[in-house]
Length: 165
Image (cartoon, rainbow, N blue to C red):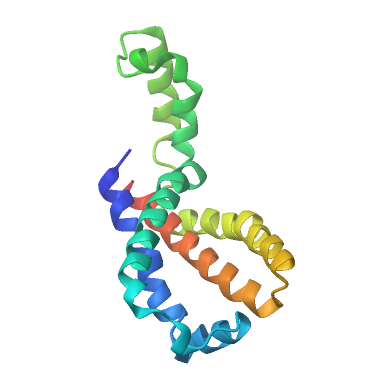
């Protein structure tokens, strides 16, 4: 696991949130969708909110490589032989080396990582937020603002992780 890549990538939701939930972008519409007024926001909890957002974003950044980097799945196929695959003198090591020589770093581009991040956002995040919104009796604006935010984050995080992980 590339912890530096994870820690850097986990900053993306904080940065995009600053713009996405700005009153000049979607902030006012989002606040209306959840019946929140500016005066209701407890500014004394903002540091805690930002720190927890970063912690949860680290968890997301730890999971996304499994979605965006195909080579991780190749290594997992050799899980029972992890101690042997780094030694090309072993049978398992030679097979693993042959597969990795064939596959190489294919699809390790920003665009390909973004594609998988977008698919993750549409196929996983959007339905999760939508189900919660149904039970919370939230409107479609709430769903699209939040699902859009997380889909963009997963796209950017996936793209970056695909390149630097």
